[in-house]
Length: 425
Ligand code: GLY
Image 1 (cartoon, protein in one colour):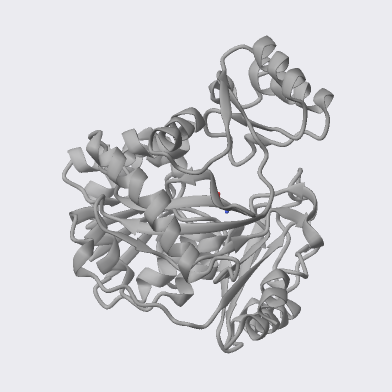
Image 2: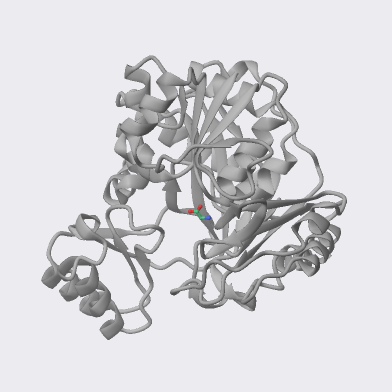
């Protein structure tokens, strides 16, 4: 089969790498891809949100399945457009991709389907939002309604900071139209975890749990980032809790949307806060997590193509999804300056040596290949990933691989997995 993977991050490298292990996959294209994929995929110079360009390419190249990595093309309706043109695409249709495309849609769905989540109010005017902020005070969570490249959630420390965030989003429009409406919601306390499921709109199959590390520095200090590393499983999510989350979160939302006419197919990702009263939903994403995917997919034993096609075709109940018990850790190596303005164009050394370590896979993200040499080209550069007999040995292998890798200004967290180790020892 001929596969097109859309996106260019570590997530898409992990998806393409896993698909390349399927005996049924003949050729993989990745649009636009990154510098680490040359052995598994042919790179195609089309942007991930150029839907008509991607459609033309998929038709011309007889693509059998398109796998969509990032949220933007999903929210723009790529799956609908591909299907109208007789092409299969793994991911949700536009009407239900709004679970990520609009925080207002998402919170209203959570409320309609009785999910455990924080109380919230929607505002279309900055003055009204500020009045409410002054009444309720901090801590409070401010969310832009639409997509904002992962930057649309702000937790102000003071009312002044909160008023500035409201002005930035609604008046200065730093996220464009995504800030026409905002949500103010209660701040939840606890430990965050991500649970993702495969679904064909009826059957729900959970992936292994995972935990992201959002902050740039060790011990969760410093600025928020797109994610500095992840591990799977997340010991905070017990088997009992996972079953409860399927029953009380995924089942009501997937059944509820279907009954309203919105069949949800693909990956559904619930960002949860494990509070003292149990798991509560922070947000939904309509795609694989970044960087959680890099720590989850190496553990998948079943052919990913079979699972993805079954999600698209509505036959997921026929698939028995199996996992490797070995835990996995993925540590992000980032450019100097990230998550603010960062350096680019630095040559990366030691990748071959790192990749030779048993059970280590180096997923690329912001890299480019120039005549066989690899250079940095983005904020998050690599996801150095390792499986181990336990989380401690996975961590040791990932960091010994990082010791082999060098580029000027490389920064990474030293404590990915530490929380899981503390919980399991
Ligand atoms: N890890 C957070 C996300 O994928 O949005």
